[in-house]
Image 1 (tube, rainbow, N blue to C red):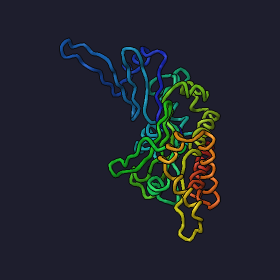
Image 2 (image 1 turned 90 degrees about the vertical axis):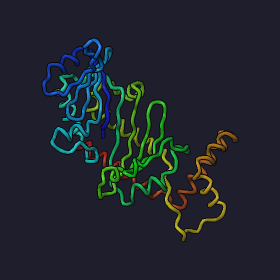
Image 3 (image 1 turned 60 degrees about the horizontal axis):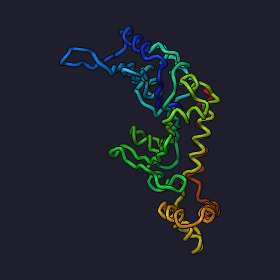
Image 4 (image 1 turned 180 degrees about the vertical axis):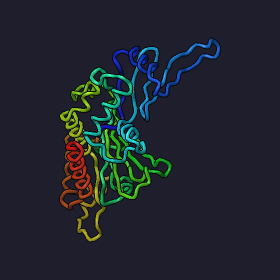
Length: 297
């Protein structure tokens, strides 16, 4: 569920003092060779979590999921299941390691996502079936130098990403990850999330899951058309044109808003008529089931 976080402490001097007094933390400063003076930023690490102190702020960041696994003596990875109990334990560990109060740590970045096992290769789904987000082209596409594949859509306050988690970690199972990363505190605040302690609130997690599913529903994920499927020429044309983000971009610029949305509805209805959403339906069900599993354990 919760993975990457970035939280600010209300008093950076207290965090800095806690770091200096904790011999278990790996801490580094910048040294001015001309004066011999120790300067900011100060960086301190506990397992995979980083605390950074500048002359004005203090914050802690990185993956809670990897941090929890690392603290438990496991590899610092985030492809395993990260349950609600694991999450609460990770927050408590973070409080103990950096001597912070989670209720006093303002949240500015948060990543919420789920790893799901599918019947079809995630790479194939991403490459061939995940076509658009809300009828727009994805902003980013990469292959992690052959170690994975992902598509990402960037908005001003957040981004959504879908990628092959199994390929990233060289796993045998077909593991896909779908996530949203919120990068502005104003969006988190609208969701009722103001500080780190709220990440341990089940209602807040359900709100984040609902947001994730809203964004998932805007994904255009289409099955391959079976050769035996008898589609008339007009409907085949609707499908062929509708699979192109360029078509929707040009239509939006050249036609009325009503015409544009009528065409979108026509496209969706045609896909539903020929049952071409089975891959998307499998992913949707897997996301729902995985969240229920994690939130209740």
